[in-house]
Image (cartoon, rainbow, N blue to C red; front, side):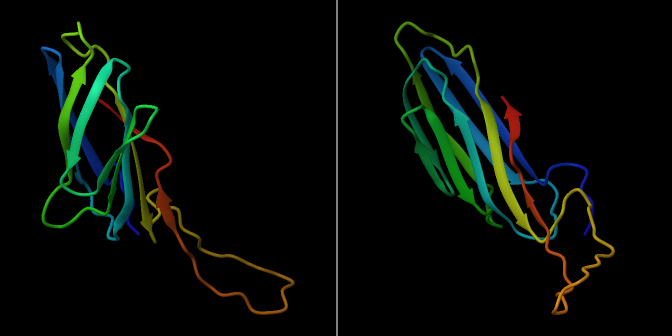
Length: 150
C-alpha cells in the first residue's frame, strides 16, 4: 500500500453568473491512482437560497435535487474513457442579476483495500480463543466530508 499525499480524486467547479442566470460546470476525475477502484462517489452541494429553478444534467451518474434545495450527484465509479461532468443553468429570482454566494461542494468516496493514511498492522495477538483466528487485514478508505469551495 503506497501512502498518498493528496486526495485521490479532484473536483473542479466552475460557476459564472450574469443577467439573472448562473452557469454551472463541475468536473470530477482521478488525480492519484491508489491502485484500487474508487467507487461510491457522491458530490453534493446546497443550491443558493435565491434560485428560482435549476436545470442540471450529468454525462455519467444521476442528479437529484431534493426539496431542501440540496443537489446530489451520484457518480458511482469513474469510467476510463471520459471524465464525469455536471453542467446546467440556475435561474435566479426576479430582480437579481448576479449570484453573490457560491456553494461549497462536499465529496464522498470509498476505496476498498487501501488505507490512504498508510496505516499498517504488523502484528496482532489474540489470546484465549478456542479456535485459531484468521490472519488477515482489511482496509477501507471512506471520505466522511471532503469540501471543495467554489
